[in-house]
Amino acid sequence: MSINCEILDLRAFLGVVELESFNRAADALHMSQPALSRRIQKLEQVIGAPLLERTTRHVSATALGTELVPLVRRMLEEFDGSLFAVRDVGPNRGGLVTIACLPTAAFYFLPTVIRQFNEDYPNIRFRILDLPATDGLRAVASGEVEFGINIMGTSDPDLTFERLAEDPFVLAARKDHPLATKQWVEWVELEPYHLITVHRSSGNRTLLDAALAKSNIKLRWFYEVTHLSTSLGLVEAGLGISVLPRMATPREDHPFLITRPIRNPEISRTIGVVRRRGGTLSPAAERFLEMLIGVWGA
Image (cartoon, rainbow, N blue to C red):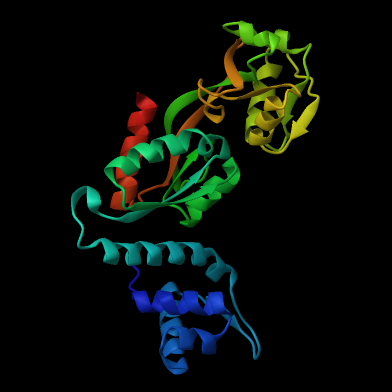
């Protein structure tokens, strides 16, 4: 089914939602209030449902309107960006890439890829939502972002998951820690030391606990944090050791920290790209995704 609406209809809807007033939105868009109301009515007819709830003193989005807000905002930003970039050609062309990325991939890995990408496409901007796995899937499904970098497949028939790589869990420790002298360690060797782990609500913790349970191994933690980046700060302070996905750890030239493989068993998480089934990406997002896949495959 095709939906026929104009850019001004979308601007009118977003203006009313953000300003919570027909009067203020009409002034901001330099149109009369009746003209603004007609724009909203036209969009609601196209959608087939009310998008705004109106009272004498207040205007707010309906449940459906609230779902549409991030999608409409992204569509308008991409449209405006395309207008500014229309005179550019080749690598100078501008654009906007909106992605949802796991925080553990957004901290160290993603900036490396973006830096490489910006060397070829310096005018392409990025909006990065560093979200947990479930929230990242939701952002892709709602259209708030073009695609996501995630560890979870999905049962949503409107989403696809394309596997990119395996990301193994590794030991993170200070360079002066006794385990730093080893080339690799086993899980049982972690027991004498204060272990820093992430909260059970984390998808990484759930995956790790389930995999270790199959080998009758249970980690005894001393510190528990919400974010894996916090665990690295505690490790750097000499408070203990941590187990993290390799992608969430600093590179080998870090002044204080080292990583080591953990074996018996080796445990990894599957990293992939989540997209809306049948959806199309902007040219900027297509180019970035190609580089992302290339870097991962290298």
